[in-house]
Image (tube, rainbow, N blue to C red; front, side, top):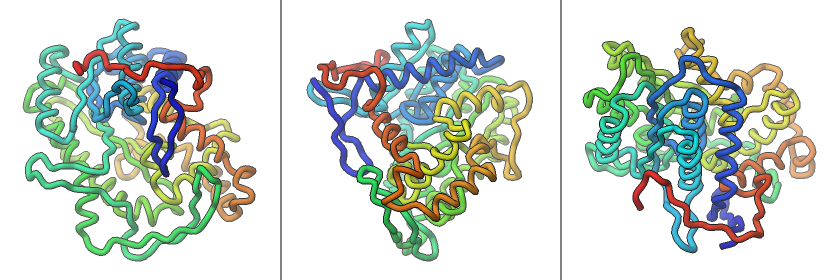
Length: 399
């Protein structure tokens, strides 16, 4: 079929298999161009492996240090006349490239919050790898059914305490406007968001993996967080999502204690603001990212997900020395974003930005390109007028 983008708000309803495959290939090429990561991981589990930082972590582990990888994700498979999700096609392309390179790669498609998928993953590790030496936790989901209580929790994106008003942009139309977001009405919103996006499930995974004996001596585990600039604090770091990130980061001491007898260690890495399906849904953030990209590209320090993950692995997790941690014990690969000169220039542009000058003083064009690129569109080298095969399977998953 011929597949064109069909958009509703911050969601693209269609996905192009050839474009997503090229995106994966481009990430692989970048990792290989940086050379081998000495003493990198060799057997890796990535929970949330199909898009964003999780996908780039899997690519970095496989093509940066020759690791065997198992990826867990929850994606919609492709069917005749119905394209699969971007994560499905990403995973299909990754497995194809990994297998061609002689690398072990298998995937599990299901609810990573569930005990069933945890058990399935453990059995696959036992059967094929024995143990893993790195566990990446990179889940991004708006909902979670708690595996112990059966309660369904939904995350919310709200300020805490008082309404928040600031600028935002419709990145499709280019209209800059003010938006007001009302705060939570009760603590239940915080509790639900923490239940979905906090550290409890990460801890459940590590507990189950350890109990099953599938964590190697010296195992490392890492989860991903974000802080951002003060202008986004009310809606992000000081809002409901921020409470969940606080909870995620506070899980590290418990995991370190759990892993102590294996000489294992856990980390949270604070990463850079990037265009993702999740960030596109957060008011204010797309406008901030379009200004940030403008400044960082002009300074020659812009990074995408794969550049971030390659730098994290090569210079922090597997550098041969202990990672550099901030005062709260976190790895900071958002360090270039948060540089004083970068933030000062973004803040100055924020005061000036309007619908009339958006195209001139921001990188809204780059934002749009990256947004559509998430779904395999506007990718160089792809003929979008040509017929393509939408029925692409992930080789290790029996559909």
